[in-house]
Amino acid sequence: TVSLIRQHENIFCRRNKINKGATKLKINAENHVSVRASHTQDMWRARSLCLPLFFAFISLANTLPKLTPSIPSPKPPLHRPSPKPKPALIKNNYRNVSQLITSSGYPVREYNVTTGDSYILMIQRIPRGREEPRGKRKRKPVAFLMTGLLSSSADYVVNLPGQSLGFILADNGFDVWLGNVRGTIYSSHEHLKKWQTRYWDFSFDEMIHFDLPDQIDFILRKTRQSSLLYVGWSQGSLIMFGLLASKPHYNQKVRLFNAIAPVAYLGHMTSEVSEIVPFADFLNGLLQMTLHGAFLEPSGPVFEQIKEEECGSSKQGPACKAAFKLFNGGFPVEMNKTRFPVYMYNNPAGSSVRNMYHFAQIIRDNRCQMFDWGPLKNMKIYGQKRPPEYDLTKVTAPVALYWSVGDVLARPTDVRHLANRLPNVVLSYKVPVRGFTHIDFMWSIEAKYHLYKKILYMMQQYSQEQSEQLPSLSTNRSTVHV
Image (tube, rainbow, N blue to C red):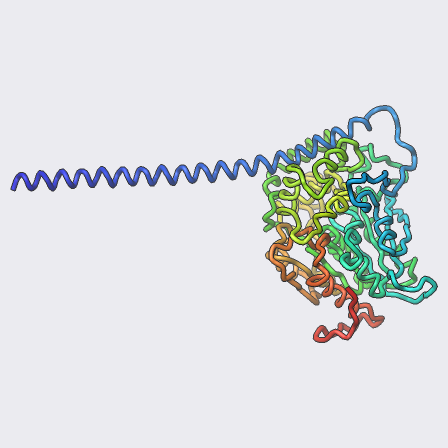
């Protein structure tokens, strides 16, 4: 009996040791996985932080030659220069917006709009379709297309005629105007030069108060019409929301507001850019000090050389891939890879450090608000410690929202929150394509089938003179050419 008891005790002890060992191994394994996951997360954070610093270094390298005593010419050209194309690349690689338009067989006119604070913005006009007779003149509905952050009007004509929204609208009877904002390659100033810090002292608040309303008024005067149809992508939608909220009388000048990948709230974005937001104050101070306010200004030789090597062909380099991963979650899923150099020639088009910092603030606070100067300066400027929000309940113009589940910037949760704030949403349309990214809204060669047809239909319905009567969306009797 004693022997049996001792045997049972030995077996029990062995089992305890085995169980303790297994538990210890399990804990170690869990700790290892946790440490590994934490290490991976830290690595992604470090990479996300290093990339803007890398861009800052490039921009600084571009800035150094401009700090010499030599002063730029008093009137720098507004158009993008077109050097001789390299034989290895396709013919459109080095074409600016107007050249992209004419090379596709469309007429183009260029205008310079001077804002109330003396910025000069170049806008392009496609007055008729490719097959439309030259001498034929008739009153057409005006379509005003505004691009997004770090982009230019080229995005609306960067693909082939049947694939670009600007060309599709022109072929369907619209008088198409392509807008730009301050800080891009299609902007300058009456007195300030781009190497001066004061030139870059702006955010999208100034675009809301000056750039957008001044362009709208210019277009309406030129066409002798009282209202237009607006298409705004990304930042282009944000500045229209801000304009209609802060200057409600402009609601009467917009028959339909098509908000593509709409941006007003960014609190739920899943882009890696969100990893940089906690460092926004530090980066703003650093970049303001080193870059004199400019962000990714594409005029410097260092920037152009690196962009040419990394993004100048259909095969992209690691820095190019990392940049698209950071801002867009990866490359657009429906772009024409052979036209990638065409996309990149006019992109990025430039902006200001303060504008980028303003976007970081609305990501951090998840508020559609004016620039946050800090409590003391806010009290002086706004009369309150927090910057005021743009009151979106005052946006009474008809709004059509176009969004995608694959967009890591304009997330569906934020779009729904935006839709709940707007009093006159006439359409909320989800693009039925898996993985459709933020940039796909402009660069996709298939968007005419699942996005642009819907936009065109809405614009045809609201292009009637009786804009007060909301059209029925149940049938479509208009002919659509795509």
